Image (cartoon, rainbow, N blue to C red; front, side):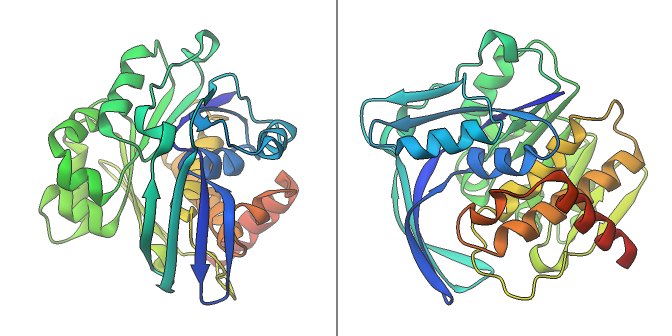
Length: 296
């Protein structure tokens, strides 16, 4: 049971109405892996610069995350600076790709046939390169964003034809398909070949849509959202991490995966960066899952 996560690893400066952090550990691969580790062994495929703090590598190792595909290159680590005036929308102040601008994702030999694969929110050309390397996976998930839909739609469409699960938010599924509602948009995406479309709706929860079923999940109630950064990545990591423990993509499996993804996103947004993802265990995750299940 393992999950390969391909994505960014970075250092973030974040401002929200409740405070700020500087040079905090972030990136799609980090958030997703820290969420997924509660279910399976995540393997990060990513790159950092020579300025990347060694304590972050030690922390990832100590939390059971495999770093065999983790590259350290001469240069600077990917950095992002952003602020939230509205907690539903990040305002980017600075994006410095550093060595991530020349990221060449190479999958280690022992990961070519892992249980599950999550293509994090990176350039579709890199996602395609990963798909060309792998031999076999039970489940392949893909996350993306409006930036790639606007600038690389053709390449992104090629990626979406090759995956089982597509993660997009409500605006993104409508933008990609041109549809005005998420159901028509999901039907169009399913025609590309995916089995499940997961529409992330922030504080309104998530919807999983397959060919013959819908599942609506509420958001896990969070009394005080501190930092929304990485919530979508944690959702995808929780979803794919749980999926790595399963044999079939049946309705019940998808429902459970959505609920676990919802729980991991809620745990994440209750503190800055990955602070709340450190130290938690499966017992706490299951307790929150059961609480959420009792409200449905």
